[in-house]
Length: 425
Ligand SMILES: O=C(O)C1=C[C@@H](OP(=O)(O)O)[C@@H](O)[C@H](O)C1
Ligand SMILES: C=C(OP(=O)(O)O)C(=O)O
Image (cartoon, rainbow, N blue to C red; front, side):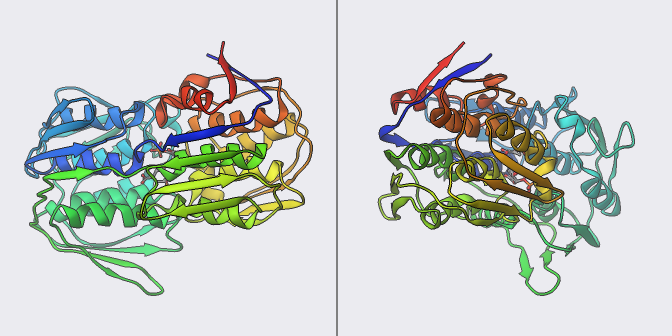
C-alpha cells in the first residue's frame, strides 16, 4: 500500500497511543504471573505478536475493548505445540527466546524476513552459559532460533552495544530460575531507558533485582522469585508522539498531544530536542498534555545512544532546520526493522537534502524539501517520519505504508483528523 502526502499543516488535539514497549513487558510478565488485567494496552501488529507468543507458551489471554485479561503460567511456561512466529517484532523475539528457556522442552522461534536478519548472538551465548541450549538454525545468530529449556543461572557478562533487549529479556527470565545470576554489561549499555522500563515492570510484579552502577553495570538477580502482576495501566508512547509533535514543528502549526505522562521512556527526550531546535513547546506533567507550535527550527547535535527510535523523527526535523545537525552514537540504529541510518540518508537525499552517512552518524544539512517517490522500507518509523517530511515537501508518495500497523495502526487517520493531507492509494 502507498500513501500520498501533500503540503499541509496540522491543528487540533490528539491522544498519544499506548506505549509499545510497556505493553510488551506487561504482556510478558503478566503471562509469567497468575492472573492480571492490563488496561489500555497498545493493540498493534507487534504487541499482538507478543500476545500470540504468550499464548503459545501457555497463557490464556482474553481481549476486550480497552483491556486484556491474562491468566498466566506462574513462572512455568509450557512447551509450545508449534513454532512461535514473532512476525516483525524484535522485542517479542528476544523476550520470548529467554522465556522459552524456562520450559522443559524445545521451542522454535522465527519471524518475517526483517526479523530473520537481526542479530541475537549475544543473547544466545549468555543463555548457553546459563544452562540452556540455544542456537540459530543457520548459525548466524539470526532467527529461526531453537531453545532447549533448562535455564539455571550463573555469573556472566554480555555486550551492551547492539541491543538492550537482550538484557531486558534476561532480566525478565532469570528471577524465575533455580540459581542466582549476576549479569555484567560490557561496554556502553545502549538504549538504557528500555532496561529501566523493564526494571519498573519487574518491580511492579513483586520481584527484585539489584543494580550496581559503576564502570561496569552489574545486575544481581536472586533466583526462585515469583511474578505477581495483578493489574497494570499502560502509559502513552513518546516514540509515537514524536511524529505528532514533529508535524507541528516542521509545518509551523500547533498541536496538543494528550496522554503524555512522565515515565521511564527515554523518548521523552523529544520534548527537550524540539525546544532546543526552536519549537515553542510546553509539557504539563500533571495533566499529561504537551502543546507545541512550530516556529522555525535550528540545527542541533543529537546523541542517539539512549533513544534510537527517535532517529527517523530527528532526521526529518534536521532536514527542515537551519544549519547542520549531527545525529551521533547511532550505530545500533542500523539493527532495527531496517538499517535506519542508511534508509533515512537515501530517502532524504531523494527529497533534495544533503545527508552524510558515517558508521555511527548522520550529518544532515537543512534545506528545501522537494516531493519525491519514496521507499518506506517496510519500517513503521521510516514511513511515519517521511510522512511528516512529505507534509512540508508536498507531492510525495511513500510505499509499504501498511507497516505503520507495527506500532501506530491508526496513524494516518490520526494525521488526517489533525488536518494532514494524506491519502492511502
Ligand atoms: O526494549 C524495547 O522495548 C525496545 C528497545 C529498543 O531496541 P534496542 O534495545 O535493540 O536498541 C528499541 O529500538 C525498540 O523499539 C524497543
Ligand atoms: C525496533 C523497534 O521495535 P522492535 O525492536 O521490537 O522490532 C521499533 O519499534 O522501532
